[in-house]
Length: 381
Image 1 (cartoon, one colour):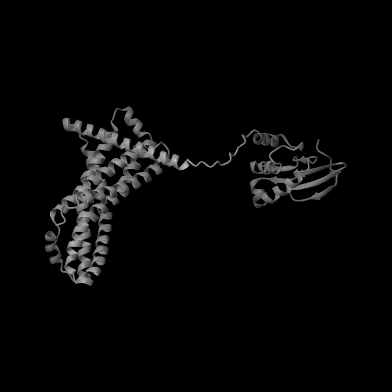
Image 2 (cartoon, helix red, strand yellow):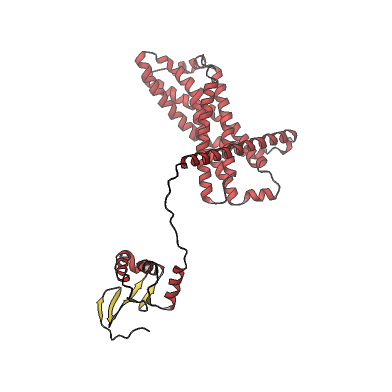
């Protein structure tokens, strides 16, 4: 029963009263024990109540609490050291709240054990993940070869509209960003090269440096990196969203092949668009280099354009276009692979898109290095 008001409190605060009742002591909680009311004073009040909770003979009276929410009952539970006091007076609604906390599963924290084989395990997991992705890409390439044979035998089924749409999205819409980056790179390269050539009086060799470096290396590499970040991420996100919205499952139910209607047009479209983008990027980069060379060295535009075919063998152009075709198709394959592996949640969509872009850029640089090693003697002289 709740005590009468004849007892005199020995201590009174905003939140509780300590009452001496003969040989026993009682603490009466008052006010509102809610998150809004406690605010920043929750920690200090919990410390005070924890000191009183050390007395096992103290009777806790919660019947005068006006309002109490989960924040208040959790604070009291922690002050009681996660156990109900031996003497407790409370209303039924508060008792139900307390019972829910008592029946919560206790979290056991296992002590950290040093595992000296953890680096080996991590390397093994990474190797297995790389192997899984590699086998998935190989399976996709095999399926694309089968689709190619099917389309050669049945030309009427070739998805020309999808190929045209991907060619427009990955090629025409990328002209602006590739032109801007190529132009600026051409200016920077020409300016830095001319600074060094002026020291040796070899100004005319700026044509050779710009022509070889841009047509053979920088043009294809810049275009591939930009396309990997722009079009590759777009492809992965598109397939990932189709996974989240269950459109891929709907296509499977209708008997429509993912590889023929989604993957094949993307790879062919980007494979056709990349060499055109390489030509465009290289031309704009050379234009920026010509402008910078004319300003820095006073080299005439006509001389630069006239000397370029003699300074740069045609094999460098074909090598750059070959890089563009290979990089374009590889970017599309990687983007589609990670897009199809997206799980039906937004977190997986973000991770898949990021992984796709990073992997595509890394593979593009590796392909460029392989071309540089394998064709090191082609087109230099």
